[in-house]
Image 1 (cartoon, rainbow, N blue to C red):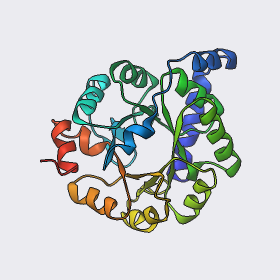
Image 2: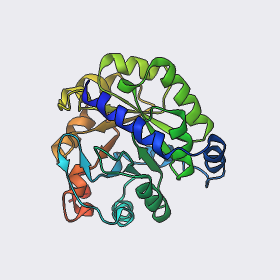
Image 3: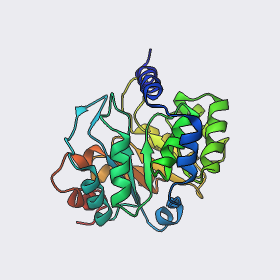
Image 4: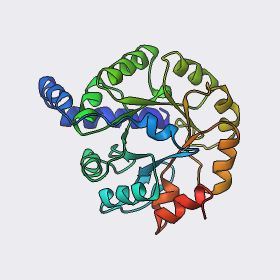
Length: 257
């Protein structure tokens, strides 16, 4: 099994343990506060930042304790982030839906539920907990799942960040007519990072879409490299959570120092 396969297997096991009746989760989803649309906010920025609440990762292990995810998200908002990403996967990223709840209550920005979405239930769950965006990882989904999950995301009023790593995955992603596409420079099957993915794939994304550079963004030169090839947004976690001043770190990434 690849790393991605192992993570998805764990996600399914954890999901089976916490599921409540379908009627209840659907009622909670449709009864949640209105979705905050990320598109106008992100399009208003020369380089939008999706700032991530991230305690650990499969490749780096523990990154930061983050005792108060809501306080960190508030710092991100004050620093000028366009959206907040919250890891909710438990086993490899030490995240939780409780983190999502806490962040949603504290900030007024759009919030992305960052997880491995492999079951319809998770989309109702995301909306019930206040998510405005969800992640669709093309490498972990069949074509039928990709289409079904994109339609369900729309039905619930959310936006989907569609993540790809290869030319083939990008072709599949474009087939569902996404509004946001993320190029992940990290191969989720091996965890290796290759920034060449930005150079090879970002120019192939239509200019009207939000083009997000993910992984391997740790300094200003990384942002400039991604921007050179067409990125108009970055998703950053590790570079922000490992420093004592996320506001300063974000300004440095954006060249505002």
